[in-house]
Length: 164
Image 1 (tube, rainbow, N blue to C red):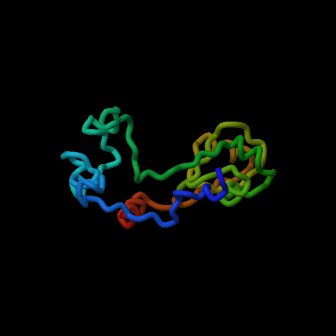
Image 2 (image 1 turned 45 degrees about the vertical axis):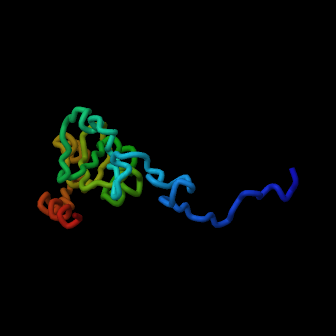
Image 3 (image 1 turned 60 degrees about the vertical axis):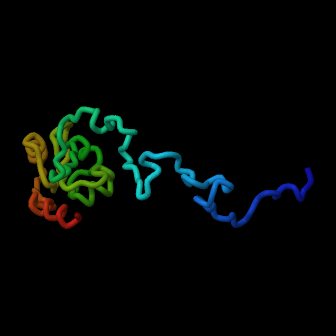
């Protein structure tokens, strides 16, 4: 092998394949599409879910439960987690929780749940509180502030309609 053999046969701009130009071209008559069938027709395109005419997977698999696309996503935070992350007398707001990685991700509302012990006086503001969480926060000498929901169900439906 010589150095000038390295690039032999490699073309920078390859000529386009001329189909349907007689039997001598190798792609004449059926233009490389075979005989008959869907794929031979013009304008053919296959759906991503098409499985050769067999019953598609999404129809074979049973459907379970339901998905409410208008429901608000609620992020749950336990009282015990607040006790670990915040100092005595601190204001626990949504911004403070996200800064301390207590409330992560995207959500519509935050709910404080009563799992764990709370022995610090905290001023907690969130959208929802469980009864036990509310009792534990007030028993420790803290305050509970309920925030208005980010969006009402009607506003969520309206936003979905606008997105379409």
